[in-house]
Image 1: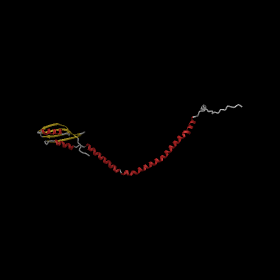
Image 2: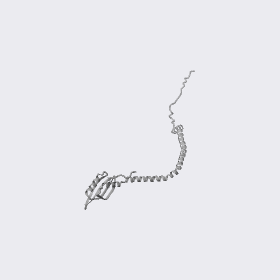
Image 3: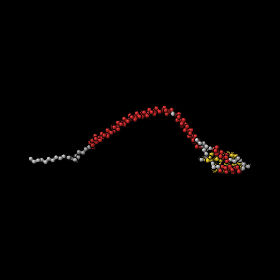
Image 4: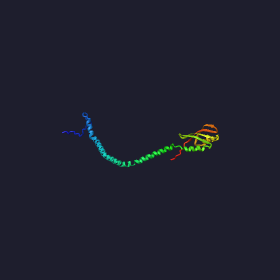
Length: 192
């Protein structure tokens, strides 16, 4: 009998069947069973951790609230000190404001008096504070012309005075009446 040729081989069909493609629902269901379960487990773990942390954070919040409530009587007992400190700060700010606005008028009077000759009699002296200087107007009487000249020259030579002007002069029965204007630098007289 003739021998049959037996061939041993594997019959593989590498092409997917063309007639029966998988439906979308089947693909989604297969993905949910394979990869989706890991995502579901991960979400459940996160929810569980958040649930546990909620209890811990609530306990911490209660402890902090209790610590704050224990400090309330101490803080309320410091109320009078706070009022005293605020009053002191107000007084200090008032003193500093007064110091910055203070003008040493007695020093200006003294400098004018130092330059005034004996023969001059001051009738009036008007001073006004302006920005950075004091302006003054004075009315005076003198017996002779030399006293007026030395007075004006003395004020002009003093470095603390500026803009010295003889604005009017009048001669009436051996008495010279004159008006003088000028300005002086502001000097602070109070040091804290």
